[in-house]
Length: 236
Image 1 (tube, rainbow, N blue to C red):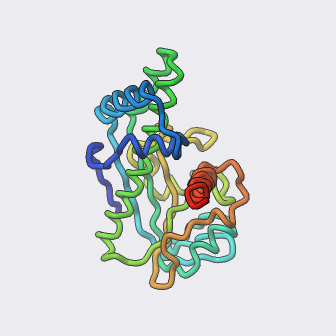
Image 2: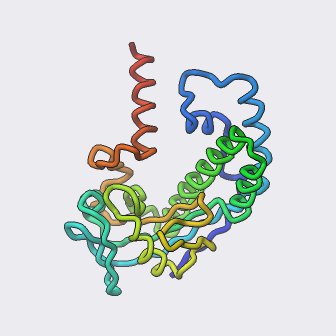
């Protein structure tokens, strides 16, 4: 069964504090100009966002490098992701997006040529889609009675090749939440996510794979490193 939800952008709980953290400010507060512009753009951007999420459940198992679904399909993930999905008996294929209208909003700002506005809007879009992904997990937990589940893993990270999007999108019906896949497997709208979550009584919940991943440029790795540095400075 497919589950599809259109979300209310105002219910995602976005705050300027979240945005400043994503921008990398940490303990250094932004100046008044940045604060004012961010508040203004956040209020404006929420009006353009049309967040949505979808997920589909499959029975299956995981082997050394792949997720093998009982209906016959195989997701060639990676050894890293397979280790983090260990114990899964069901798999959740998902997608979430900030929406085509948000992409149009970003395109308008880009045409205006204001780099700072584009940067802030890009950060807002990232927070919108990640928050939509978080809400998708809460909806998943409600639908499955709180069954244990792993974190979410996406093509392009932890060794899962970006071309894995093709099979993922096929299993999600082709264009989940009206997200289109380009010839080089990039999603449009850009502010979209997709991937897999493992479920089962023996899975490790919410364990992130940064200690195993070799992708040094991953934004999650940088975000975690930044927060750890902040913690060490506070304790020093």
